[in-house]
Image (tube, rainbow, N blue to C red):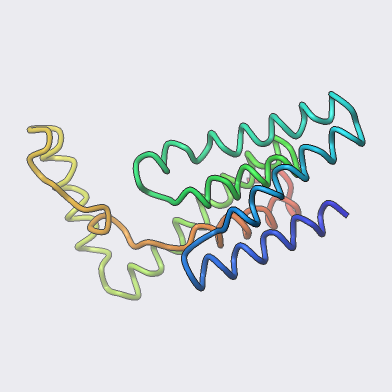
Length: 168
């Protein structure tokens, strides 16, 4: 039952993320609370801690990319919701699958746009100048990589974790 609930949450978030580039609180926050309460009522304090650890791991895995402006808050809350529903290990593997899938998607987009060479040139110059004189090269984050709705890799990563488990 919980797997079907998670699947519905992921489908809704993928649709809204692709259409509007937003993952809505009205979906993620009730999912987080549902995961926490489900485990609290079915397994007591131990279940609540299982769900809480999953929530914290999911949240912490994406909070730094969010602070740096690489992803949106909805992505952070979606991964936290996955953690509260499936636990810490599941969300940890989901994150790794999502990172790999997101990188592949970004690479495909750059190849299709014929931007791969210029991307690596900009990245090289960014690191050369940032190392030598901090702030000398002011690049917008759109200059470094294409943006993708990261809810899609999260959903695919969760599916991969469910199907393949912790095999990377």
